Amino acid sequence: WGKGTTVTVSSALPSAPNLFSLSPRLNSGVEDAPVAVGCLAKDFLPDSINFSWTYQNQSAVSHTDLKIFPSQMSGPTYTATSQVILPALDVLQDSYLVCK
Image (cartoon, rainbow, N blue to C red; front, top):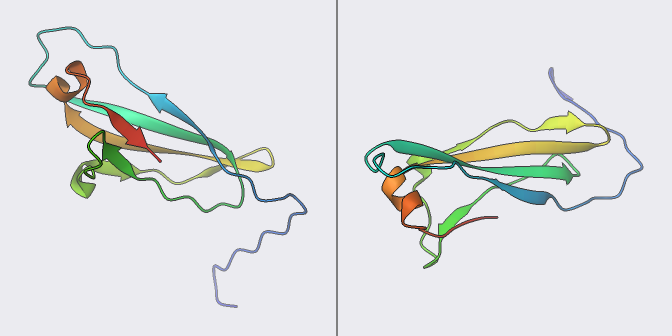
C-alpha cells in the first residue's frame, strides 16, 4: 500500500443515497442571470457516488456546468452535493432536471 492509502473498516451494509433537490426561488426579471441548482445525496455507504444530471428529454447537462463536491462522513454514512449552473430562464420556464 502506498503513501496516502486510506482503509475504512465497517460492519455496516452498503446503502443507496437519499436524494434531495436544492432549488432557488426566483423572481421574474432575472432571466439573464446564472443560477445554481443543487442535489444533496445523504446516508450512502460506501463512500462512492456518481452524480448525473439530465433534462426531461433525457439529454445530459454539460459537464462544464457541473460541479461535484467531495463527500463528507456524517455519522456512519456519507453526504455529498452536486451543483449545476443554468441560465435563470431555464429554471423559470421549469426546464425539468433530474439528478441521479
